[in-house]
Structure formats: C-alpha cells, structure tokens
Length: 422
Image (cartoon, rainbow, N blue to C red):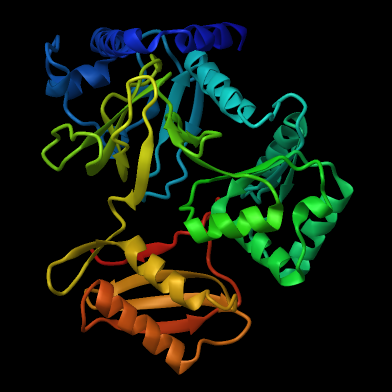
C-alpha cells in the first residue's frame, strides 16, 4: 500500500497539460506488456504490435469464459495475484485477477475519494448495507473483514419495518461516520425514516455522508435520502474487475477515475464518440499486468460531459446496461429503466409503494411486482398505462402483482428491470 499510495500521489501531481501524455504512455505500456507476456491476449489480438490505439479490438465478457489460469500473464499464478469474481448482475459472471500492486492502487484510489468527504478508512465507522454469504465459512470471513474495516453490516435480505426498527436502534447506539451500500436498500431505510418523521442525524449526529453504489440512483431518491439522513448523498460507480470508475465529488460532479483507468464512449461500430454523445462505456485498466482489461466493454451505456478533460473526465449520465433493453412491438428499442422511471414517478407519489421491479415477459407484455402497504387502485394502474403510452407506445399489456418482498440476487442486489426475452 505504501508503494501504491506514493504512485497514486505521483499521478495526481501530473499537470493538466501533461496528462494526455501520461494516459498515452500508460496505454502503450499496458498493451505492449500483455502482447509480450500474455498468451491469451496475444491470441485475441493476433498481431505482434499495434500502431494505432483504435485498431485494438474490443474485449467483452465472453473473452473471459475460460479458466483463469489460461488468462494470466507470464510469471503470475493463482498464488501471487488477487483473485475475485464478478457479481454476475450483467448475466455473465466470471473469475478475474489483479496483480497485487494494481489491487493496492485500487484501494489508494478509494481512500482518496472517500477522503474528499473526511472519511478515514483507518478510523471512520461504516454502516454497511450489503449482501453477505449465508454459508458458515463465507459468512464468518465477511464478518471478520467488517471487523477489520471498522464497519457494521446490516442484513439486506429482509427489510421489513420490524428489521428497520432494529437498524435505527443501531444508529442510536453506534457512532457511525458514514453509510455505504446498495442504493435500493438504503432508499428503503430513508422511506422508513420518512414515515416515522425522523432525520437520522438527530439520533446519530456523527454521521457525515452516505455513499450509494451498484444500483441506479434516481434524483428523487437522492433528495429523499438527503432530507431523511441530513447528510450529502454520494453516488459511486464501480466494477469489481476494474476499479472505482466514477465517484461524485464535493462539487456534485460524477468524476471519472483517470488515475488508473482510461474510459471511452463508443458507438455500435466501435468509433470513439465526442463528449456529450451517448454510447457504450469501454474501459482500459492501465496498471493490471496480471490480467488484461484493454478496451473492455463493461456492458453499460453512458455519456461523458462536454467539459471533460484527460485529467478530469466527468460522467454526465449513466443510462443503464446494454442488456437491459426492451424491444417493443413497433421495433423500437427502449432502455428498460425508462419503464421503471415512468412508473416510479407515478406510483410513489403518496409513499405507499416501497419498491418495485419490472419484467418483460413477451414483446408486448410486462409484469410489475411491487411491495406496498396498500394495493394499487384501478385508477393508479390506468394512470401508469397512459404514461407508458405517452412516453413509449400504445398496445402494451401490464400486470401488477403485490408481493410481501421482492426477490434479490445472491449478493442482495435488486435488478430493477429484467427482460426475459431471448
């Protein structure tokens, strides 16, 4: 960590004028390294050298669907690298590796970003809203990690009012400095506080901020959380196989990690799009020598702000995953979150509906599963259907099913839109 922190500070000290040269140098170095030392990447590229960055083919998750040992660079083994696996929220889980220096740089970056909000990883107390393995050994490992990281983990598989009452009591007992976890779980806690007319800092005055991650953060949810928690809400975007990708800075900008990653926005033909244009998010890990992630299509769609620079890129918008697209009868393609957003803006007006998910089961048929105190009325359902017709198209069929609780994946994430179309 000492060496990685020093390297991170060195990168930080690079001037704006010299930053493009830094990026170009690191891109060249990492490509040359893997072309020389990684057999899997050599087979993927099928060239001994590359003259132009844009010649490099785009990597996707399918390139990693083989044993990790076959993907590691020369002199790296399963024993001398950091190994982990993705959550599989995109539908393509895989095991990956980072060399230990690269992994340490990831933590140097995280520590730096949280420091923007006066959070010290060595001493600040974390209220953690994350999933946890339910098997005995996995559970104990994560509990030990939490202890070492000075964090207290709340279960997110049951977020009933009875459980959230116990969560609130923990905030009264412990001096938490910050909240960190999945967006949907923390939103539910904020709605619980709203119902009880409690601002969290009134019972936990040590609280400084709340960092949400892994799921979409909608503006109205952010406003609600800021009101009920009494602290800034910080939006984090990351990928376990890469690094922290973007982190909201104190100026309310979603600042992209330009220290250890190079982020591009590409169109469907793999052309680089100008800032301000929507496209696929493609990322290069500049320091991972153990395993290549070079022009890696992470599966998300987004926009870089027009004011972005090489040193300070700004993520203007994260639209969603490329595989969360609804194909409609007219042939129109719509991001699945469009349905979620339109429906959300209507059915949550009175605070009755706690959360919901939308599933596309046929080209013209969608199921809405929701958790609420009272069932939706006929007029509310009609209003939703009219809104969908206005924003998308007519002739779509919706069914609404009230549930006690919604199904989350094994890690505890809530997938807000799911297409079951093949």
